[in-house]
Image 1 (cartoon, rainbow, N blue to C red):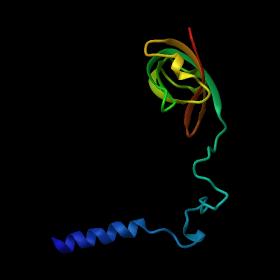
Image 2 (image 1 turned 90 degrees about the horizontal axis):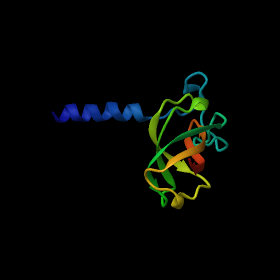
Image 3 (image 1 turned 30 degrees about the horizontal axis):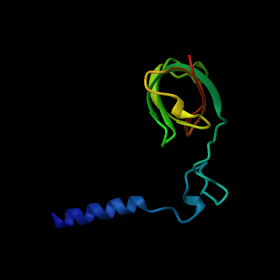
Image 4 (image 1 turned 120 degrees about the vertical axis):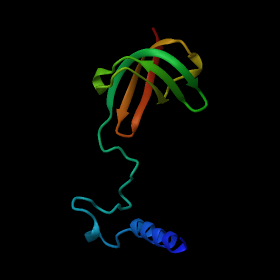
Length: 118
C-alpha cells in the first residue's frame, strides 16, 4: 500500500510541473509576461438594463442580489444573481424593492452601476 501511495504522489506531482521554455507551450499559448495581467478582461464591457426584485443587500460588501427578468443586451434569461456594485448607495434599498438597474458585464463578471425604484 505504501508503494501505491508513493507512486500516486509521484504521478500527481509530475502533472504539476511547468514547462521550462516557451516551446513547451501548446500552439497559440504564450507564457505570461509582466505586461500580461491575468485578471484583465479580454472582451469589452457590455452595458445592459434590467428590472427585478431585490432579494438581499450587503452594503458592507457592496453587493446586491436581484431576482431579475431577461436581460436582452447580454442574452441572459431571467434568474437571481448577486452583483457587485459601483457608485450605488445601497443604504437606500431593502429586500422586496422593485427596481430598474443598469449593469456592465465583462468576461470577469457583471457590476451594477445604477439602481432606481420603479
